[in-house]
Amino acid sequence: MGTAVITGGTDGIGRELAREYLRRGFDVLVVGRSRQKGRAFTDSGERARFVAADLSLVAENRRLLEQISQRYPVIDVLVLGARYHRSTRTVTPEGFETNFALFYLSRFLLGHGLTGPLSRAEHPVVLNFGAAGQTGPIRWDDLQLERDYHGVRAMGHAGRLNDLAGLDFADRYATTGIRYVLNHPGVVVTSFAGEYDPVTAAQIDHLRVIGKPVTTAAAQILPFLEPANREPLTAVLEGRRVPLEPGLWKLGDARRLHDVTMRLLTG
Ligand SMILES: NC(=O)c1ccc[n+]([C@@H]2O[C@H](COP(=O)([O-])OP(=O)(O)OC[C@H]3O[C@@H](n4cnc5c(N)ncnc54)[C@H](OP(=O)(O)O)[C@@H]3O)[C@@H](O)[C@H]2O)c1
Image (cartoon, rainbow, N blue to C red; front, side):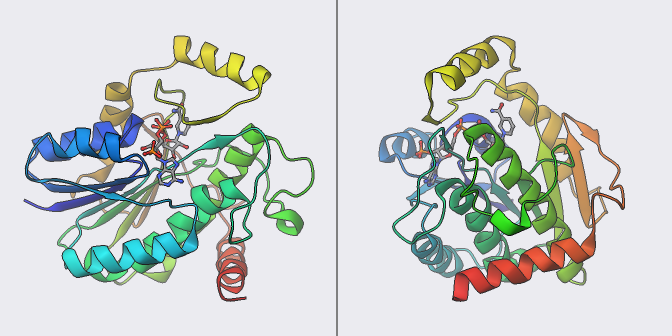
């Protein structure tokens, strides 16, 4: 049928998408940290696979890339969905701000690193959870938010970085046929994985009341992943296509972010 690789596929929206692709007959590999959650997924059938990895670490992303490339010569669907909220700024042992590392760098590495297997698929698609044009400017002088860190804003900022990463990706690999979908699902009741200060924890409790179920979020995303779609880049907000306004979606900014990121990774 096909192969789907889903980071953050052990919980929340990612898990719902993983279950749906299993139902459709795909081989599905989910990636997360918790082996217990991984086992719960692999128990659902022989086409369900799990790899444990801490994707906030560049080295773990590179190890994962090797494993995946050896095992899956063709990937039809790549979902980049791992996230973890931190109210307090932390830095990984490799020196990156943790949210930047998990929510942006990992997705950058896996997207670029899997273009080989993706480009061998008939209708390949990457789904990344970005801001879909919904948040403010990039902090070019402080990409890892050393000043005025706030957990919620950090996730919004990383979402915007992912928007630009998608724009660059779609342009860079235009000839491969790999489509890139950036999705903002709205408020969805998930595990909301993270470490929250009391104020943010209270906000999350509220979101658990007003949010939509993961089944609704998945139903709003899946149509945009279908082969019938043709655009190289699609931004989606809660099931609606968002116009790529030139003022916000600047290819020059996207290339600049790509270059800065490459320097961070090789420096
Ligand atoms: N829920 C919402 O309201 C909402 C709103 C806007 C955007 N989104 C976006 O939608 C996507 C899915 O979010 P969600 O709320 O469904 O997620 P979630 O329920 O919080 O689940 C997070 C997933 O990420 C994995 N994960 C966390 N830290 C990891 C790490 N260091 N390495 C590898 N995996 C890690 C978790 O696995 P383990 O537990 O095994 O670590 C889990 O599978 C995210 O990109 C999120 O930003 C969600």
